[in-house]
Image (cartoon, rainbow, N blue to C red):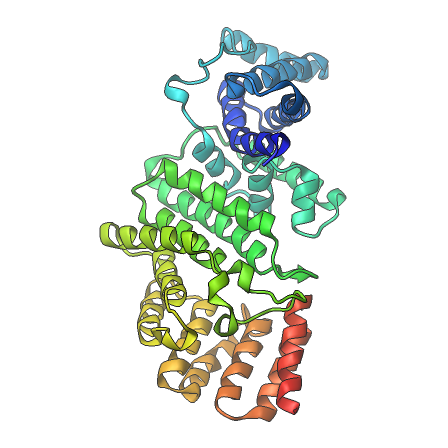
Length: 414
C-alpha cells in the first residue's frame, strides 16, 4: 500500500470523527459537513508528500474549524447574526480546539453521527446516501457512481436530506434510551442495504461493487467497536464477512455469475470465514436471538461445508423456520422455500412460493421467478422452468444476472 492509499484509508476513518466534533461544538449539519470535506481535501493534497501530522485528527479539526469560521464570515447578514449569537452563547466555540482537546479520552462520535444520518425523517434512500457521504467520507460524485446515478441527481438528494434533518430539529446526540433500539435497527438496516447493493448490484454491467461492500463492513466494524456486546451488531458484521468471503468465486473469468453450488471453495477467504463464524457463535451464546444472527448462522453453515453436497440443509431449514417466525418477509420465505425443497423435495418448496404471487412486495421481483424456475428444474418440469428463467431475465436490470438466467433457459432447451 503506497502513501496515498494509506492517507486515503486514514481520512475515511477520521472523517466521521471530525464531523462529529464540529457538529457537537457548532451545530449546522450542512455547514459542518462542507468544512469537514474541505479539510479532508486539504489533507489528501498535503499529507502524501509532506507526511501525516503527529495528531491527524486534531489537524483536521483545526483546519475544518477555520474553514467553518470563514464560511460564517462570508454568509449573508441574517445567517451571520444567527451564528454570531450562537458563538456569544458558547465562549470559544468559534475557535479551533488545541490538539487532544476535542473530547476527553479521544471520544469517537461516529455512532452518534450514524444515528443522525439515519434519522426517521429521512427516506431509506436518503439515509443511505447521507451515511455514505457524511460517515463514509465519500464525495458526492463517489456516492453517485456507487449507485449508477448522475452527480446532478445525487447532490440534491443529499442536500435535501440535510435540510430535512435541520427542519426536524434533530440534535447531535445519542437518542434517548426509549428510542435507541429502534434507531439502532434503522442504522443496521441502512448498513445492510449498502452491503447488499454492493454484493449484488441492482443494475449495471457488474455483479458486485466492492467499494460498497467494503464500506459497509468498515462502518459496521465501527458500530461493533462502539457496541461490542450487542448481539445483532455482531450478527450483522458476521453476516457481511461470511457473505463477502465468497466474492472472489462468484464470477467466472468472463465476469459471469457462478452459483454457490458451483463455486471454487478454494477461492473463498478463510480468514473472513473464521472471523465471521467466531462472531456469530459468540453473539448467539451471549445475546437474545435476532434476525441478523440467524442469517449469519445460515451463512456460516453454507461456507463451512467442504463441498456443496455436504451442506447441512436440514439445519438451514430449521433456522429459516425460526427466522420466518421472528422476522417474516418475502425474501425470507423465498430462501426458506429453497431449504424446504432441498430437504422435503422441490414440490414442497414450490408450494411455499405460491402465497408470494399475491404479495406486491415481491410478486414481480425477478428473484421469485428465478427461484421458482430452479425448483421447477429440480422437479423435472423443464418447460415451466425455462419460461420462468426467461421471465426472471426480463425482470432484472443486472446484466450478469440476465446472462446467467438466459443461459439456464438455453441449457434446458438443449
